[in-house]
Length: 467
Ligand code: PLP
Image (cartoon, rainbow, N blue to C red; front, top):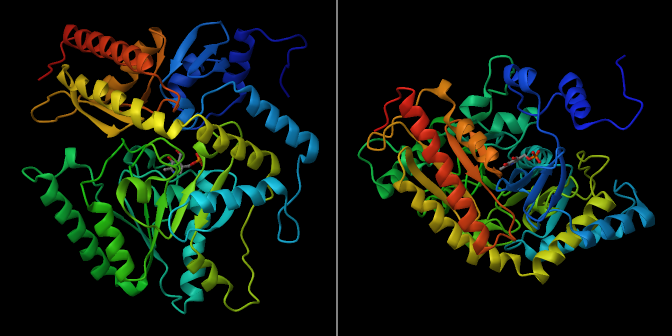
């Protein structure tokens, strides 16, 4: 047992309780036990206020998710209305609820091609988990029970359950204290042109990546490979935009070998790239399954979805007497689905996809200009999904020593200036709400530029050599 304050806790009490009792996602134990966490208490649009009343512009967008912006009263009303009407009813086959049914139909109308079937989950991780299991179900139903192996890419992030973490593979996540599923999951090189083998241009690199996939298939035996998992743009691995034509060529190889293409659109769906889904609209591919979450409710409530094709449904259901033994108590939660419906209505009514395209182009251009700064090796990404890669030497692309923690130093400097950007190792990433304005773009660009210059100057003063 521990003490719990009787009266309303002060911001300091909240921070102390958090530090004493709360294990955060991706905690770095040393700094956390020393400093604790910043307590946030209010949000409106793109802005956050901490418990002490300081204001920050949230260029992180929650965590790639606050697409419509925070503090929407009509969202609060839609949620309250659904809680009052029907706070919960399970969706285990014999019952459904209106928001779940409407949302499934709405997603089917927005998703590309014959992706007309929806299974609801609680998060992106559980959507990816379910996709993994559905690959097995589908391939077995098709009479190919040996087609169980999965292929994914280095630097991908697909979630935090045992399987979704094992499908993902960011080097920093693979700490020796945890274990990962090693058998049955294979990883290819990340399609990051900035880190292509020396002397290879983007087109040659694309050929090389495709050849690597074909060689991997030949090695495993394509008759044993059931699914390919890919984020259209690898988000948390560092906003990796693949070479032109890469996804289309990978999808064609998958089709040729009856390998299901799972597009993990947990980040890229619901407007971040100016479309409901990026697979077809941005990259010209028709996946067999799409996983999504985050922007589905703009973070107002937890919800994930696996959207899959009629073809997969028909194969799974063909026998007429099979069970789909997967799903969560909260699959199709009426309140979360009502929030998603309201979220989609707001995106449509305010043309936030159009805004993401228009203001996203300004954001992309302003961020790209940071490449003129010392220490910025590359700015990459599209529209409202941007990454700044900091390096020691712009010519050789050599990294700064890890212990300098340059991403965190820049993020902390920005935070002191009232701007939140996310540190990811030596990178800084941004994914602001789709409501971003041209004025915001100027402010974010100028603030980040000042912060990078300041950190670079500090590093030089500390004796670090920057090329
Ligand atoms: N897939 C991708 C591409 C993600 O970026 C994330 C989370 O960042 C996930 C899956 C996992 O989603 P969640 O954190 O909702 O479980």
